[in-house]
Amino acid sequence: MNHHLRPTGYRFFPTEEELVSFYLPNELEARRDDLHRVIPIVNVYQHEPWHLPMEAGELCKGDTEQWFFFVPKQEREVQGGRPSRTTASGYWKATGSPKYVYSSNDKVIGVKKTMVFYHGKSSTSKKTKWKMNEYRAIKEELDSTNTCFIPKLQHELSLCRVYVVSGCVRAFDRRPTGLGTYEIGASSSLSS
Image 1 (tube, rainbow, N blue to C red):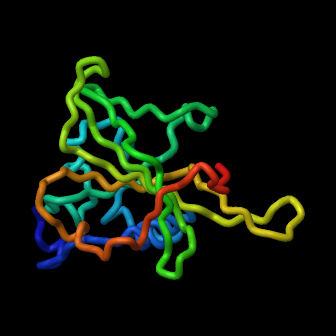
Image 2: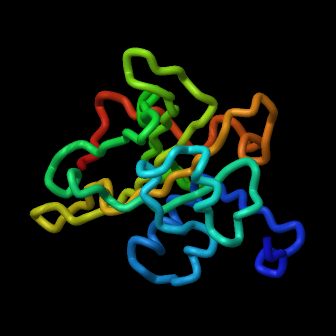
């Protein structure tokens, strides 16, 4: 690895708020070309999870704990279908309910979905230690009367954090509990 590309001691451990309020909007609005050095555009569903670390951004190639990717909307999603989360050797399965991601001033800024990778076909598959958090940004848009803002989920692009469950506490696990994400209930007013 070219160590001159990555400053000594450099670690990329963004908070969920930073992922959803800085990195994702900057990519969605094409405001910064340098983001791909840290978070490249990769369709993670075309790769086995253990191959994804090799696809990481050049500044994060040596990371052993987590890898980040901008994931474009799949063609079948564009046509109104559900995304395919199947790879050649298995599939990603959502676990639990999606959760809101909040800013530090308690504003809903995104949605987080957690997935686990299963190796094999669905009837004989085995759960692996590979996990992924998929983040989507929320943008407020004016309603048809132009009088109030409605939160709208942005589907054009998601930001995924891929990691392996290790059983030990890592930097991205050492955040204050009770802050940042909340489960989305059935009464959610989020439109998609």
